[in-house]
Figure 1: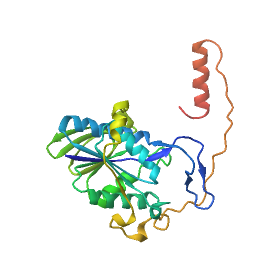
Figure 2: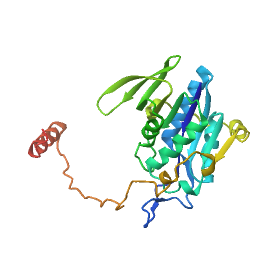
Figure 3: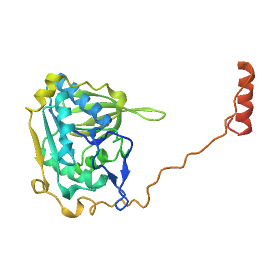
Figure 4: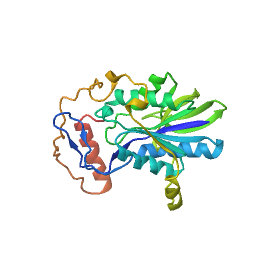
Length: 262
């Protein structure tokens, strides 16, 4: 069994600036870490590796320094990593990103299970996993809060939604994005960090993949950002509840009725 976990490196800060021309995140000079949701996907892959003997590979797209997050995943226990790095990929939206990742997955070949984190904490779209599934024409499960092998070529997952739960079965190969409730990611040990530098990390550039140049980077991204701004803080009037607990409860009920909330 072969599992590929797609990860992303995100800025290690909330103080991210926006490029005034492109309206993209300006990541220059910012330290990066692996997207926290992606760590849950890596942990799931490693748990499946422990029970099935699966091979686990990591895949990411970005500048050369994104190799740090791949090394972190290999220190957690992944067997190998792939980095897609080329200026032609810069400025890509989720569609252009998903296209390049899908093409790389085709080159890697024979992946039984492709895992994503629920979403990236810098953009919060949750779109790349489903986009990749569509490009690969594979079944997909999103928001998985649990996942297990339920047959030789089958997985069963429980989707945790806002007000309900769903249990879905998918035939492999399949694409699954996972929630943080799934597990607690392990910490790399000093020994495994050292061993991670002995594991293969393959870097692919533009010419290493079968790509349509019209679908790459900013020019191949149909998303148009017309404006980026921080919401204005809203000051709200607070009315304290006074008296005994019973009196305070009565005041609360009266206020809720006045605002037609009950």
